[in-house]
Length: 514
Image (cartoon, rainbow, N blue to C red; front, side, top):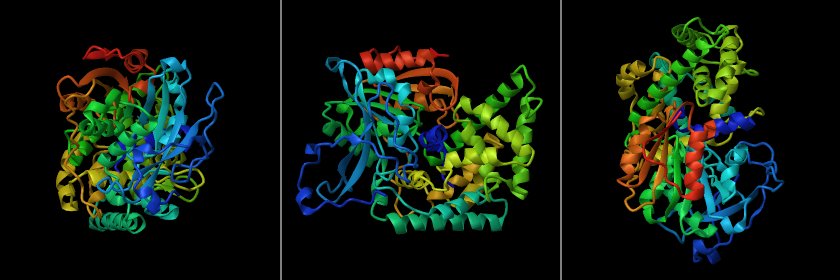
C-alpha cells in the first residue's frame, strides 16, 4: 500500500483536474559536455503523458500567454556525472511584469513524492499570479516521476487489483496475501525500472535542482516547496547552503523523524483532521446528515469501514468499494476543507449502499484516471520513499506496533501501520533514517506550519526550523485546516509569503495567522 503521507501534490492535482519517457542514454559525443552549459529549448506544452496523469495540454494563462515546456538533461548517476543521462521535464510561465523588476525563476515542488510538477503548476497557476509578476514560475517532474525517467511497476489492470486488496489484515491468510502482493509489486518495479531505482533519492533530485538553477541562469535558487517539497528543499539547503535565495517551505515534513515516527505522526494528524471535520459537520445550522454528534459521525464511519471489511459495496464500474478504498477516500478528503462537503455526500451515499463517491476520492489519492489508466504516482512514491528511508519493517514488528497506532487513530491507525511494510523487499537499500537538512550559512527560509494539517502535522514546522540551524528557519503559524497554508488563500499567510519572495521582507519569527 503506498504511504498516503507524502501524496499531497498528486492528490490535489488529481482532484482539481480529475484526475513514456524511457531513460535517455546520450551518445558518446554528449558525455563529455558540461551539463550546466546546455541550452533549454522552450516550446508549447504537449498534453500530459499517461505517467503524468493524462488529460489535455495546459490552457493558456489569463493574459493569453502559453505555458512552455522543455527538457533538461541530467546525469542518471550523480556519482558518474559524465555517464548516461536522463531527461527531466520542465514547465514554466514567464514573468508577467516589467523585465527590469524580474528576480529570476521561482522553482516549485508540490510534493508527493511522486507528483508531477508539470501538471500541477498549471492546475494551480492562478494561485501564484502575484508571484509571477517578478518571477518565471517553473516546476518539473522529479526523476522517477511523470516524463522524467518514470519508475514503472504494475500495469493498469494489475493496479486495479492492487488497490482492491485488504491493506489492513486481520488474520494470517490476509497478512500473507498483503505481503505477497507487496513482494509482487516491488519485484515488478525492479524488473521494469532497474536502471533508475538506485538514482531517485531526494539527494539526487536536489542536485538536479542545482543544475536547473544554473541552466536557468540564476545565481541563487528561489524556491517554493510544499509537503515533501519541504524535505527536498531542506536537503538542497544542506547540500548547497550558499546557493539558497528566497525560499518558502509550506506543509512541512518533520525532518527529524524516521519512517515509523512519520507514519505514527500522520495517524495522529489524520485523526485530528477527522475530528475537526466531524465537529464542523455537527456545528452547522442544518442537521449533519452523517451523525448527530461528532462522536456519532466517527462511530458511523468506523462501522462503515468494519462492514466493508466483511462485505464491499458497489463502487465505480465493476470495482467494489472495499475497506481499504474507503479509508483512502476519506483520507484524501481531509487534505482540504474544500472537500469536506464532498465527502459528506460520499459517506451518505455509502450508507445507502453506493460507494461511488468514496471510490472517486480513492482514485484521486491513487492517481487513477476516469479512463482506467494510472499515473506513475504510486510507483514513484514508493521508489523514492524506499530509496530514501533506511528502515525495513517486518510484519511481526508491525503487529507489535498496532496498539500504538490504533491508539493514535482508530480509523487510520491500521492503515498507516501496515503501510510500513511497503519497502521491506525493496531492491535498493535506503539511504538514511531521516534527511539531513542542517544548512548553516543559508539565507533565511520561511517555514509555514498549519495547525490542522493532516499529512504533515504542525509540530514538523518547528522541528524543521530547529534542524535547519540558527538564523536560517523562520517559523510562521497558520491556524487553519487542510494540507498547507498558502493555497488556503488566507491573506495573512499570502501577505507574508509574497512579501518575502517578492520584496525580501522576512516576517517576524513566530508570526501567527488565523
